[in-house]
Image 1 (spheres, rainbow, N blue to C red):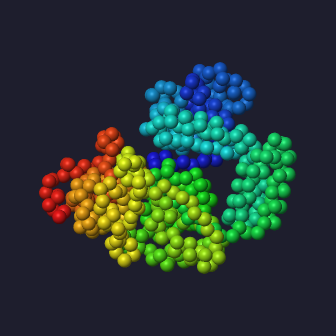
Image 2 (tube, rainbow, N blue to C red):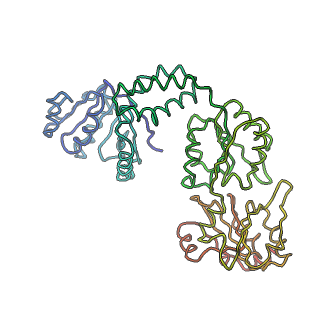
Image 3 (cartoon, helix red, strand yellow):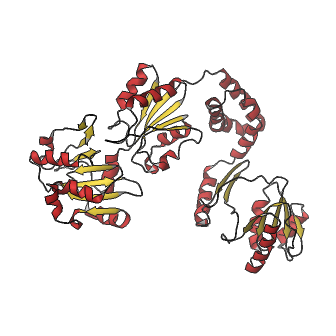
Length: 477
């Protein structure tokens, strides 16, 4: 981030602009919405600028800018549409101590003006570091269409009521009040005018003051495979409302960014055969925060109900009489199989699919290898990288075809996704050569669809077995 977004107070402060043409007009249309004192230096100003000066909306000086003209200015805009003149005036403004923006010149600007959605006092600023102004305008247009025009008046009225709301306990009680106002009581009352809204605020505050504190609750939320676009709408809402987020190691950073900034974030990561937070500690953390009345999101990668030790955490809550709910997520198998263009079941091939774990609490997990070794069987193997040689040995021992396709998808759905195409006979050696370090899902009995594979070669790192040395088969066995 080269430009740190802030909202600068300009009420009563000087804003100076040099220029009198189209570039100046574009900036002034925005600046005139502020409560700043605007001064324009322009030997030949546009008629609109002259009209604004006549109406007292700005001060117009009909000459070129000189040293000292930007003293005490908070902001300065060079909008002369002439490189040499912009360089001259911006140098003067810098010497006078103002922050400088040179219109359409990102390199020489100390700040940029974002695209703005104005629902005063609600202001949304959209910036792209100067890389894509068209995209910023498109986002602005989309937000303009979505946000009701009444949002500004509601916020303005609500601002006058903030002191009264201090009667509610700090934290969630106040957030619940304001959420109720902006999304329920306020919009319902605004059609009756400001008086109706103020009456609705009084009624709403009395209602919230009479309420008992909301009891603690734990939401077990499936965080999906890592792509934030694959989160459910309910998961996003709960992250935005949570007081405490207790998350697993495999939860991606973009998903954690969706949590409320004030939320307590607790990493309870686990790693197979590596450093881990003991399950008992996780249980105690969940119970402790819920008992204190917090709204807790227990964020698990994929779907919370698949290989997530969910029952142990629910049992800990039940033992204390604490409330909980489950929010499903997209499991890694669903995301990964989509990335290779296949389906988990197919008529004439397999009428069932097995979800297996490569290891359990005792070590490598044992399964019905004899059934899985039959032709046409399909399995999605979670946490299977370190147990690949064990799985390979069990399947071959029970008669599995050594040339059965195996596809490993690392970081499914994420920007750094990789796909390894191999076969059962070379699986351990192929994995070792690929040096996969991220979370991976192994499909036994599925190969990437040809068309999808070609597309992935263009957009992801695909590692086909045929590109590997022939000796891998002997090395694996």
